[in-house]
Image (tube, rainbow, N blue to C red; front, side, top):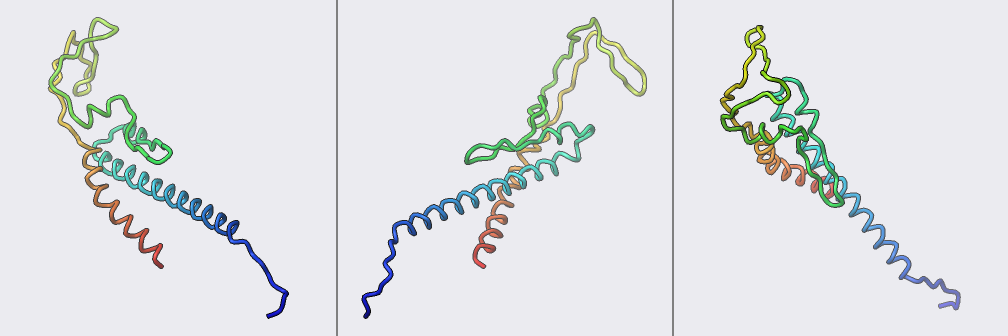
Length: 148
């Protein structure tokens, strides 16, 4: 063998490969989190649509992004009542002497109203149950894409 040789250091190449692997892993994690968040958001919207009159509840469904997590849900103040329902309760005027509301096209005035309560809609709970099933499908799909 001749005395003309190429000498290569592998340490910089190894560092480059490790850095590249870390970047690919981070991108994959971010992509998976975003896909999962979008799936969860769409499932909540699907569950909410039959009950939506104004679209306000649906418009409030947002994705909150953390470093390694996503939280998806409605942000309207009444989301808890929609989800869990309410017991019968008395409604009193806050800033007036009487309540005013429409019944059958006529305005009705009252000093108080006994609200019968509302049934729980369990929109997020049903969406979460469906999410548990569909996230497995999403992971399988992404796994198959990675394999080839």
